[in-house]
Amino acid sequence: MDFFESKESLTTIEWVLRGIVSFVFLLIAAKFLGQRSISQLRFLDFIIALTLGNIIAHPLSDEELGLKGSMITTIVLIILYIAATWLGLKWPFFKRFLDPSPITLIKHGLIQFENLSKARISIDYLFSELRKEKVEDVQKVALALWEPGGTISVFMDTPYQSVTPANLKLETQPFTILRPIIIDGKADKSLLQEIGKDIDWLLTQIAPISNIHEVSLAIVENETVRVFSRTEG
Image (cartoon, rainbow, N blue to C red; front, side, top):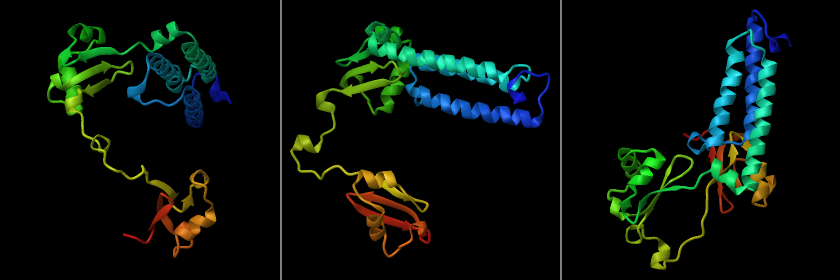
């Protein structure tokens, strides 16, 4: 375990071990912190991610820095992060500090120019985001909000919203979703349990291919299984 401590030089094996341990440790730390995409990072998430990256990166590039101290510091930061998240749930003031209220950018078709400065975004960026939402006329927007995560939520005015079957009072089929129940010859037992079926039911559904290991992919929808065997294509 010498690779944990600071040394004048590390062997190739010790560098490899330090990298493996750091990688596994960061995976475990990320599980405790929760999983978010870059666009979903809150202010606190961004600070923690930036700090943890620097703490772990230095021992991975400098043999004179021990790995043990970085791991201890990381654990302390994780505890502080969890505590801050818990306080955000309990104290409204702290929650507003971590997750401020959305900023209104457009209201009833009118751009709120003073709020653009608060959000620190330009007119060009606003119109870029509107184009992504297929909005060609600002006056058709009932409300646009700058969210704490750095995204813009756009709500069209009622006359310009898409017509749905509910608006036309049309009968529709119940919602269904295709889900993989066999991937590369392995059955998803948790999905079988969720839909109230067992492995014997699945075997009857994939007949005449009786061997699950021969199935490349099988999807289930409304208790109907469609099979794609390895020999297809």
